[in-house]
Amino acid sequence: MAKEYFKADFLAGEVSKSEEFQSVADIFALLSDSTRLKIFWLLCHSKECVMDIASMLGMTTPAVSHHLRILKDAGLITGYRDGKEVFYAAEAGRRTDALHSITERLMSVECPEFDSAHEAVNERPQFTENHVEKIRMIHEFLSENLSERITIDDLSKRFAMNPTTLKSVFKDVYGESVAAHMKVHRMRKAAGLLSSSDMSVGEVARRVGYGSQSKFSAVFGELYGVSPREYRAAGGRRRNGRK
Image 1 (tube, rainbow, N blue to C red):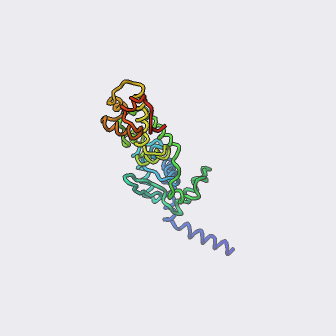
Image 2: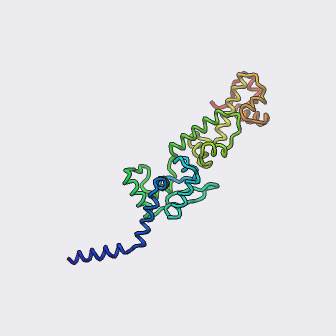
Image 3: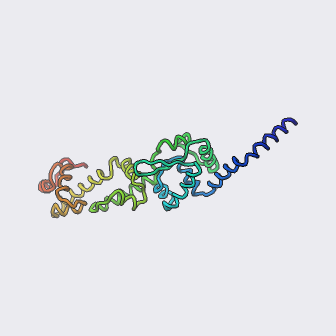
């Protein structure tokens, strides 16, 4: 009987902690929005910027910013600046770990790459399939528009991808920067035009995105070891160009 009285007293004491229960209730209310819950779960596994989150969820950046602000005010996520970009991640702590665990248990979702949410937010995982797919689309777009001088900012806006992420994923996929990789593609196309057409060197330069013939000739010489005219005169036999 004494044990029952003790239990009742203990429970009565705990349920009297109205502020603490209200705090937890507020968090559950905050995560009752499925979009907000998606963003919270995503940031338990990856550090992301507003633009990349918007791209992954098919949302506008203002809408994502609204949810991020609410999550940040609740102390569930944190933001930090990396160069010009602001990235977000789940705030490390007992409360965040518990919410992360509850979400995945209810959804029967597993985290094969991470032992804990804390590890997830402190170690950048591999880029998502969505990132890689977009980079391949960007590569195809650039390859089809070699005559145009397209900037990273242009690509970022066209493909709704954060500039920093774009450059990082491109290098991860293709092994070199966007500029270095596309320079080789431009010179390959130029070599083909020099071999198979009677275009002037100036016209070839314009076809591969160079307004300056002298600049084009210098870059061509770096890759092939000869000037464009010498390459054409030799019948298109390449020397130092890449395969």
